[in-house]
Length: 364
Ligand code: M6R
Image 1 (tube, rainbow, N blue to C red):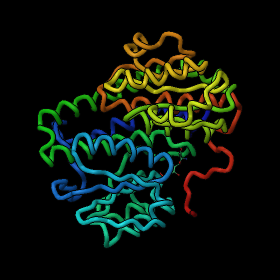
Image 2 (image 1 turned 90 degrees about the vertical axis):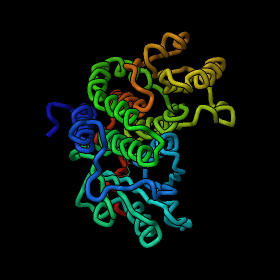
Image 3 (image 1 turned 135 degrees about the vertical axis):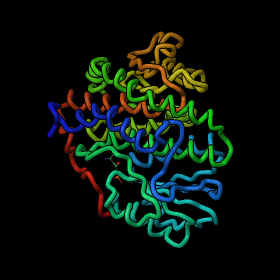
Image 4 (image 1 turned 45 degrees about the vertical axis):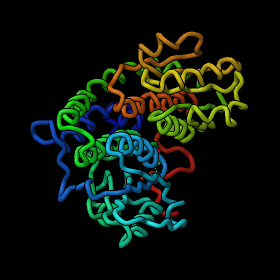
């Protein structure tokens, strides 16, 4: 049932405020000020290293979480795509927790990577949407994301729910390890609880995205740029766009621009810059200006402060509400998804069943 939407993807994008609220609620203590994990939970004081493994969109959730875990909890994190991890057979140091993220819980490479970690990692944790899946069953602890069934091949609500669960884990790790006070935690959780309302406000601006997408649909190649937490989001935006609109899209960390991709810039290649007005904003903007100085067309996704400071001369803008810096990846996932969706609609491709792709990749 598409719930009145034309596509499952549209429905699943629209559902995010509701499913996220449920995911958040299910991991908070009744007073909303603490984090309660299911089962025996995880005591992060005994974790020296976190190895995160996944495929596709789930791997971008891991990459985002690396910033959170390192910044808040000061735990070193490796992120690997499962198909590389499993055959590289990496050494697993003592006191490593291995964390697998998978919507379906059945992705062949992720499951094989998990099996490789049996008897090697101190603990195997998974973040899954399907609690009875193979990956969940073979983990010491399975953390559900509560996204509900996701039908669209392009993952949307599962990604943002994965981000919520991973953020809560990182905050839990930070408090366990004495890197964050109970008051700081409570403040972050209060921000997180207000996120569904902010997402609703962002979704209401869907029409603006649709207008921009009509123009983007004319491009053959698109670049996505972001720094810090926006780098994994740029990767996700590019993946979504190529998956369902078949437009060639690449993502780079903004700082890598000069190391090669800037050679691609001309007026035919739109550059999507994801840049909330955060601590790294000025750096990203200077990369954006390098693009514009070479005749590149910039689509800036930012908040109103960012638009005021750097919006001049850009080709297109999508303006989002402002949120606490730690929440920007969850918010900026929405325009990334909507942009891909409306671009695909403008091109007339099959949004829910894109060519050559399966929802769950159970063979390698
Ligand atoms: O079920 P999983 O989360 O393990 O799936 C991983 C990828 O196959 C999946 O995220 C894929 O990249 C999506 N089609 C992205 O939209």
